[in-house]
Image (cartoon, rainbow, N blue to C red):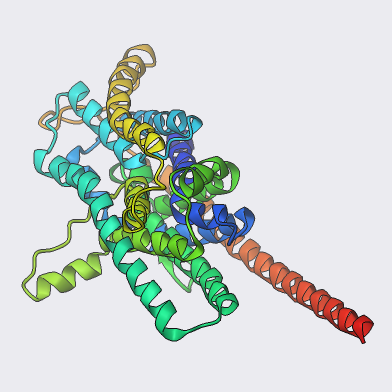
Length: 413
């Protein structure tokens, strides 16, 4: 029963991976600096790490917007958000899961009679505006620094491109980590209050209840990256603006910095300790930030090669996503409650119904934790074997290349 309720969150994670992987490696893949297969593997590994290690920073913010107090409601919200993102993805529009889940939470608030926290909603909406602006500013600044370094260092073009290629892999990994840390709240945040899983301790590290949920969500995101992200990568990477290799590096790094800043509770604490205002832990729309970064590069170059028609279509998707998600959520909750007699939530000033839709039994929670524990051990073993396999495969390719070069020079002599 617990796994059934989680399926909608896993579907939402898959949709996020299919859509938002374009924000990490879309520019690099379309610039033919990194192959899609290599980009998908790197993004999958680091998005899981970001979700588990740093995913709790933004999950509380969505809870303040509207605390979904029934598993049936959590299931419905995640399902509707996933369907909304999937519909937009089918049209190759890089929309945001943040917008979808925010619209769904507001729809749940209307249906259950709960108030929407205006301050939290204002914070989130402001990031929809400020995110692309900050991303564009970072992109322009980093692009200027990189070009100045290229001129002053007088590096050979071939060596410089090699540095860019390696840099794209590094910043892509950082971008995937930041995506997992910032956006996992969109996938599993509505389930955190309803679950109280037993802590998993395997010696090297331990996972709390929320981290176990974030692990499952990260795996779903990774699966979406691998299976369905290539088409949206092509839209973001090549349809909006033609990007050079150094521009692709700058765009990914600028986007990663914005997401990391708004999910780093440590950085926020440092600013607070020196008397500065804290950074709000808000789920950022990575799609909007990456578009802002791409536009920033285009404006720096003169804005003559920006495809404004594509931008208009994407902006339309941004506006339609929260509205569509909110409406679908409202009617879906009505359907779930009246057709399937599923408790989808209640007004917070009333007493909670004491049923299986709201309480996770201790035995069920223990079984769920055991499943996650064995899944984690399997992932560690599989990951180790995959790393060893690719290491020896790379060594074999290098050996064959070296033998081919020796044969070539021998034939010339």
